[in-house]
Length: 212
Image (cartoon, rainbow, N blue to C red; front, side):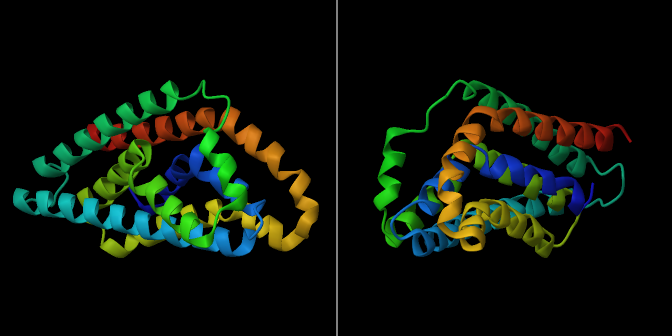
């Protein structure tokens, strides 16, 4: 298990309401300020979530006393991560039929930066699928004895993917306005398939570590 192994899970982090919210905000009246506030809120939530779970698993591994391949605590953490990932697959599959974004998202077109910040924070800190993903990532790295800062590339890539609608707006201006709704609809309809594939790959990696 290494840092590159967990990075694909950033797709799972932003799939669904998270990226759809970013698209709505990029089309709002104060798109730049609201989108930036949304990213700050999301970044803070992910940083808190990853850090809390990392130190929980770091403390658990510290109680095991071993650091080799046969460390029982490390294997226990891998089993926990595997169980969480399987639960995450069920959650992603269960929400696949949501063909329309929540009605409250239409309000994002007139959202203030303050509202966007709160939304970004809540969507990542309170969403079960994101919480499960952060647990899996932090648990995997802590279980392998990786330092805390190894979580930062995961955080940065998550925010970079979430910022794509804003970056498109900055690069192409209002010309991208007609494209964003199509991107939003495609993500809403197909993101669950990509998420399932990524989770399945990560499950295979964790299981291969357990079988070594």
